[in-house]
Image 1: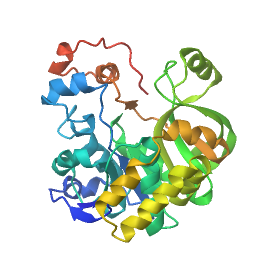
Image 2 (image 1 turned 120 degrees about the vertical axis):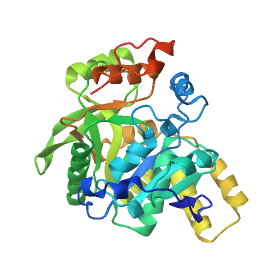
Image 3 (image 1 turned 45 degrees about the horizontal axis):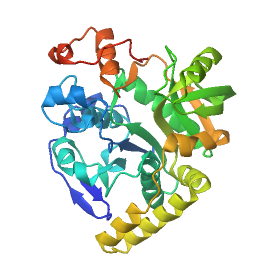
Image 4 (image 1 turned 90 degrees about the vertical axis):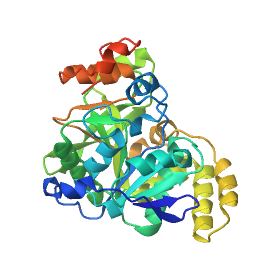
Length: 341
């Protein structure tokens, strides 16, 4: 695996390639589509569960909760159904490099951040990196901690979103999920009239985006026909760079400087100081909420999806699938009803 570390040099983690062994299952790669897998979180809310499962405090994306693959491995193999490894980028942290070395399979690029500066930097850094190498690249961004059961159907819908972006390069397409309750831990997307279709998949404009609303606002969103934000989205890399420029100009200019410095092989400690000076920002709240005219939304159809952000959601999802691992009875957090599509 080409680990593209920040300062941003190149290295490799070598391991067995599970996807290559099962390549007959993959759909054809979507032309010039890139994938960014977001894998820099710490999974603090899920830690009571992951500690039970693996006996330590490793971040949840490196934990095997179902089957034989970690959440990160599942995400990478899902992306590989449509995107080759040489156009796949994993964004994480230097502090997680050991876990990455044990988990990554294939030849994906890795961007290791010196420290966590929030999801806005986690998204915009790879957008800058890809745009510098493939100016017309279309990119799907995928968190590494989601349950998605129908993986082929999901990636087919990602490919349709990519086709819509190729025809409408100014748009950032959000993949939404039909809500089942007034969830306050998800973002909500309020759709507007249709913009068009890609194959049989409809795409709509976005009236507004609301990140993690109050219960009262979430109830109003549910009643109004809004959908949950899955934080899976597709856009041109350059469009994301422009959105970052318009909403977070200080971050935009700092990232440009970091990319230029890394290309000149500036000393790593200098790049670390530049990175530490970056403002901490949230991509949903500080970027997406402010660029509604650029947004489009398509709702996942026939896909079992859940953001595994808490033990409650994990337990509820597994219960819906008829699964009850031994560790469930050892948790102290009530299962609740969860939030799943």
